[in-house]
Image (cartoon, rainbow over all chains, first blue to last red; front, side, top):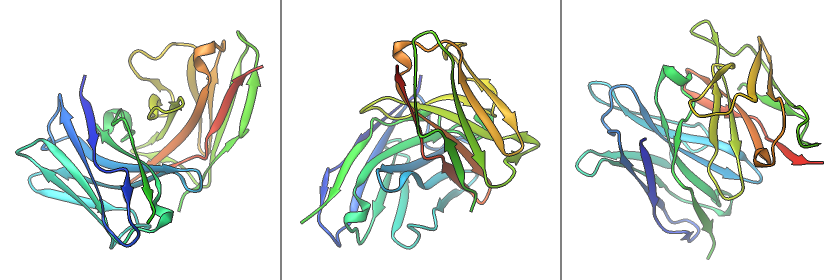
Length: 124
Length: 112
């Protein structure tokens, strides 16, 4: 069974960049079928998809409109992981952040594997 | 944007009784000619767990007391005989190919 293990700081200052990493075991970030996603959850915004990276002969990224311009998701094939960078954070970015696998059409692109979650607080 | 609205926001059901959660989308959720609704279960301090995809397909290992139904814009998750372990928040979710994923606001299920 594939697993995702998240790492990164739980406290970020306003205007700085939030950075998290998701290590993959039992699958490959270069999978020709799956995509690798970041989702966050907060009381005010609920569950919110942020973006994804995936490999189909070349690397692709897609980002939610709500964070476009502030978000970057990068794959690291040497470590079999992917990362989230969210810049210019404000207290509204305080949330639990999850990484998740979309295995493709077998689940209708639903997320079948999730990381354990990282509570990130934006505060000075 | 497609909006997913769940009802009720919470419900309390006696052990062994049926629990029914509804999810209504603001427009059709057809994707590749199939209803592209997923259902998740989330327990406190845990990530969501995928229960059902394609509106009706139970994931491996999910008890058969969980079932999904519906078509068009109206979908239902049914727990046929509520167990104590089913206390959780349940979410519906739709994927569309812009791409984007949208979730319902969640329904909290408790024991009466």
